[in-house]
Length: 222
Ligand SMILES: *Cc1c(COP(=O)(O)O)cnc(C)c1O
Image (cartoon, rainbow, N blue to C red; front, side, top):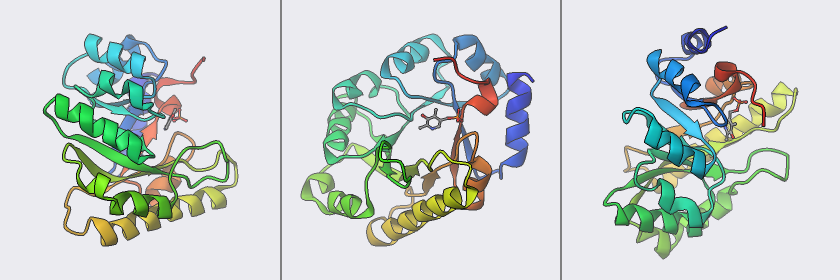
């Protein structure tokens, strides 16, 4: 199947309100352009250097999402143009994003990443850690970042009940934070969950943004 056909198939199964992030990490510009020509405008990358290069080389109306673990010392390279940073998991990182956004006279949209999987290797906050972050004076002083929702990755497993319950956890976290911290903020709306193998479950559990790579572009060779 072509990239266009894959994209169209996925889009047919997604409710119109769910945004599709086409995860193009490791894939060449030709593949991205093929998806672009099929109408796709949101792409996700997880390496700062690749993202910078692709931003330079590809059409300027692409919205680039950074979906990987982001080191504070690399924020400056993507701050001028990144449209959403999915995986913010510390106040330190958020403060750096704020500083670099200010230098570029812009506000950068971010998602807080939560640890919902059983694997210990996955990054992310707990609900308590997020509350502490959001209650801190340091956070409240930040003027150039806007937290628009939450992000999480389920355990890599065939156990769909487990995956579903982890997505339910993320939805509950979103709802709690919305009530406690963002009740007056109309932009806090996003739940980024679901990848190639589990996005249909994620959508059933309230995802507003799925991050799909291999089902669009084919398997990756690292
Ligand atoms: C690679 C990646 C994806 C996409 O994974 P696929 O299984 O190829 O759909 C989604 N989210 C994150 C954070 C990733 O690193």
